[in-house]
Length: 123
Image (cartoon, rainbow, N blue to C red; front, side, top):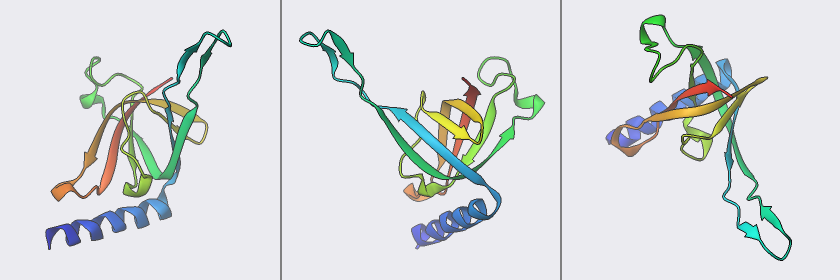
């Protein structure tokens, strides 16, 4: 029963972010196959890209400690229908901004992802 409620909350988050947010791209570099001695090159694994709607905010000044959260870091809230869990090192793109994921904290009561909260830093 609780998971049904959280599923409804996740859908409400999707609806709100579709209405009020913007497209957020999450890009992850795929692992390459390493050095190819026959070709003399390092094989690149390419990239994986997911998209969902989201919004970004500045951190409040009282939250910026200069260590864990630095000046210029952004809080990005991403809809739960992203298709993956953001990871440190991923890149989020919002319009002209490209930000590297520092930390990702999914809001997931009872194992149901309702929202992805991402701390991101300029690249």
